[in-house]
Amino acid sequence: MAKASSMEEQLNLARGLRRIPPCTQCRLRKVKCDKQRPCENCQKSGVDCIYNENHGGSSDVESQSELLERVALLEAQLQAVTASLRAKDVAPPVTTAVGVSADEASTLLECNCGRQILGTHFSVHYDYYLNWVELFPNLRDIYFEITAAYEDSDGPKEASPSILGPVQRDPFALQSYLPADAEADLLIEIFFQNVNPFVRILNKATFFADLTRFRAGQLAQSNSFVALLFSIYGLAVASLLPSDVVASFGVEREWLLYKYQEAQEIALHQVDFISSNKLSVFQAYLYYLTFLFARGNYQTATALVGLAARNAQRLGLHKDPSFFNYSQWVSEWRRRLWNQVILLDQKAIALQGAISILAFPWDTTLPASANDEAWNTSPSAKPSDTPTLTSAFSQMTFVLLKRAVLAVLCPLRQNLRTRSYTQQLRHIEAGHEKARALFANVKDDMKPLATFANSIMEIEFGLLRLMAGEGLIRFGEAPPSFKLEHFIGALTLLERVTALEKEAMNPGWMWVYRTEPPLLAIAIVLSHMTVVRDTPYDARAWSQISLVFDRYMNVAGSYSPPIIASLRKFYDLLKSLRTQTSLGLSPMHLSEEFLGQSQFNYFISGEEPNLGTLGVAYQEDDLFSLSQLSSDAVL
Image 1 (tube, helix red, strand yellow):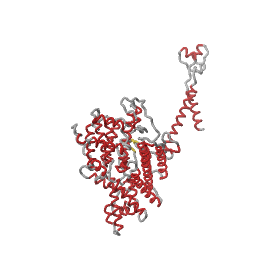
Image 2: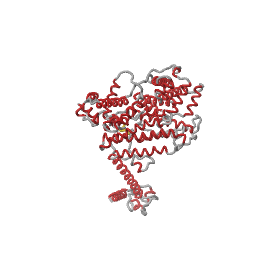
Image 3: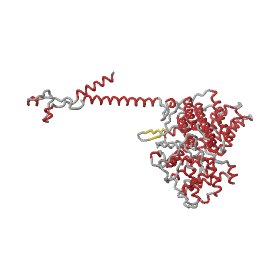
Image 4: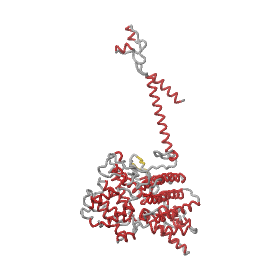
């Protein structure tokens, strides 16, 4: 009612202020009219004073009424938008994806990756997430202690002899690194059997066509192809066990890895990988970064992923190729390259505790679910040469699975502190249901890979549930029985990983876990080992964790990156404590390797230490907080 009376008052005001037109005679004579009835001019002339009320058009009152109605409608819309923004500030709503129903949206967690906050003299990216190491205070302290010692040490820390060093100008410098054709063929075969099913960038048919031309001396861009070849050789060796390398090539695995790493770096320098605009050069660079992560050079790889992201942005890979006039295969190639940048960025987050560098806007879509042979990769291919996409399990499904897991992981990391355990589980189960749909139709020729990929999917979503459970223990109020159930879940997952080696059609596929072991599950078993002390699970846990360290925690040979070294030190301390306890001796001397007696009590009891007794002035939330760094970094 108040709005109606207000509208009426405005209409009356409009009527009072509307312009009164002159009379007809004054308008025809073009003289000033005093607008009286009759006017003075008409009285002097002795003619009738006539006013035309309509002027052949709509009245001013009607036009004012329409205008005010439109203004009222806009005000109502503005108030609705303002109310929704206020509601967001109080309780952030769940982000609803396109094509997602309201019921599905209620199960999803929001994700604010890359949100920019602008100030008067600064700009920061709000990219808050909780690194998984922060879930384990005892492991976190060991990790940062080892990291500090690692950074303070002099000399090279990882095997990166020449990637940023002097450029080899000699065009024949790489000849000594090239293997014989028989050895090269074996390495290429190993790559396509072990690595290519899980790292999908190149097209297999195109690669072998280029290889034939290269060996015949007819390949135009031979330098970039040589860089790709050395990356393939290096990844093939990285996927093998040391004993298999000695049996197949007669040399130690580390020697061969170093050889092909150096060859990759020389080859990348020769093609000017930093400023090159060729997709083939960028492809070789991404394979090189994948090799560095597989070898355990996490720090070098993480730093160089930043360069890859900027180069990808410079090449326009962050913009979906459908907006441009590329052939169908070139568009797919660009999507695959961008997808690999995303996956490498996530490796840096998980293995090095880095902050995502992909905070700038991007809209490149997922690679297509099509096999390599469906693509026409010819330079003369037409935009209409579209491959037949399939709903069945394809060669690209594993990549789509990794992105499906990432779509669940990223919001989960950001909401471990703020959302309830039940909400997190609903979010995980909704993503798990979508991932299962990728395996709805599997043809016979793809069943071995699909079976292995399905096992990986179950393990990945099991790790997500474990992350949510550890968050409940760390920040929530877990019931007394939950720790034991949580521990058994992590132990069962590790047993599933080791059992997968016997089930896989190709044992070489296990390089996926040898180069990126399930660190979260390992940390849970180690941190909660005291929960199962003097229970039937104790022997089972020690047997399994020993097997995991022997098989999957030697990613870098003699060198161990800080996160691997932290877990191994934690494991060694637990073994020493167990040995001392079994002998009936006092293990108190082990406390010197921690922050003091309070930290040692936490180590053997699982209770949170009182930081006030450690002689430390800062609060717990500020201790080694990676998340604090993410929101305070000035760009």
